[in-house]
Length: 632
Image 1 (cartoon, one colour):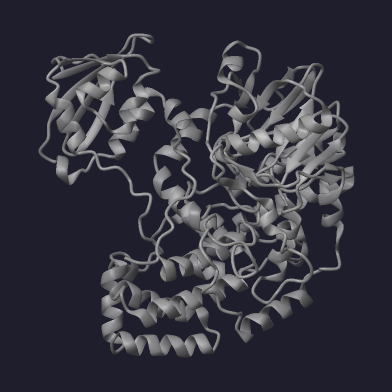
Image 2 (cartoon, helix red, strand yellow):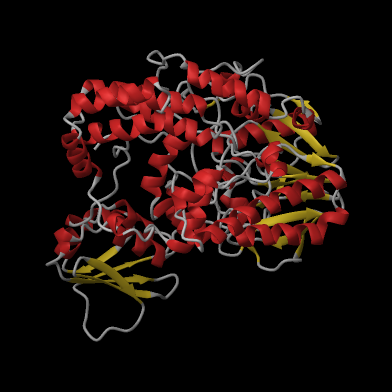
């Protein structure tokens, strides 16, 4: 992790902001602390999870500093949330349902059956999932895993699956894997299509490379951070397709509610009628969630999200005594559960409806985000605070969903790149030194947003200007200190760190071998197409056939005009080269080494002109896991 040695204290205006927030929010309400500690069976001592070579992949003990009142360098509301989220251990939700919390970004749930235990959402990495299962077994007995359920298609809810079961047990039918329809396609596509860029930005979002401490990373609102171990995937064997669908696994009755297009493209909520318990997946947690996550994603639909939560209340409200989720802590009591779900429902509905109301009055996304307040009840409820999503960036996301990137102002239709705009702004304002001087005045006055705007132009115009880099780092740091939103704090502090110390790259890579292995042939060919360097391939023309002996499929890949396309339709002309292989071996193509020797070693038969493969490989241009963010 990067050092916090260069960190500065909080400025007086940040300290004043923190003090005002302490007066405004209901810090005397300690119900969440009671709920987050309720049912504790045992903690994992120590909490660190390491790899075989001793590398630390997860360490909840690093957050031991989260005690007492918040220092001025941390927003007191975020400090409170981080104190809650770092509470770790094995907890009883109700007899027969247990959770391990604080052992990764997400929670894993164990539901005891007749012979073993059904695992819901087995964390992000194999190593943390293994540790969670070991903690459960230590205190509940060495029960075999008899089923796995993925509630949705985000990697922190399936990546650790091979820490709780094996591909062999799944293939043999001993362990069914249940997931919402479309799970595999969405899970692998998100981590492959724009996976490199998302993972790099996720390093900022979760602050995985930042030092832990009051001047560094204190949490991410949804969980503390992401583990950095091995991401795995076992494809589902049972599709969940219909609300009301009931499945029984090892005697555990589960009734599913489909909720596609909410927090994930493929998502389900689960009711356990025999336990009067409801798993809300990630559609109702103790925070305002993201409508557009800062790492990047497709904009989520708050309208359907709100509607599904109404349906949840209607379906299960009268038969639920506890609601638990794949993050945070449970809520007990039928009335409290209904109130909790209703507030979450109203939160997403309000953001959606009010944004559209103001869009139709001509407001832009930035204007809406700056001026639309939440109702007092939602603003004062801890569970609707913006620890992970924020009101600001979620309102902009709703605008983007309906209106796109363009706000209608012609001046914004054809803007300069950051570098070209920076050069012009710096010149117009009298040169770099003059702009840094103006930014220094803004910083001293507490106008950090304007200071960041000015200094960002200088850094992109003259990236080597030491005064601009230093002051921009200081500015981002103070913005981070003031942020209630965990990812905002992490983005600001990560930007400050890279300005001071250079790039820390991508700590967690989600496009693992298991993810790639689950690419269908069309998705795999799409992944190749994304890597084509279009300008370099303008004049290249080639045709390649791929024959899969185990499925009987035949694909024609064609490169023309810088675009790699594929089809299964019969072709009138033969291809220059034919690859004969199996669907299981096909993912080797995604690695980019297309030499005939390498493909032959992977079990592929190459017939025809092998130089065609060299020509294709020559125009592949894979992503950069270390691309710059706060500098050109």
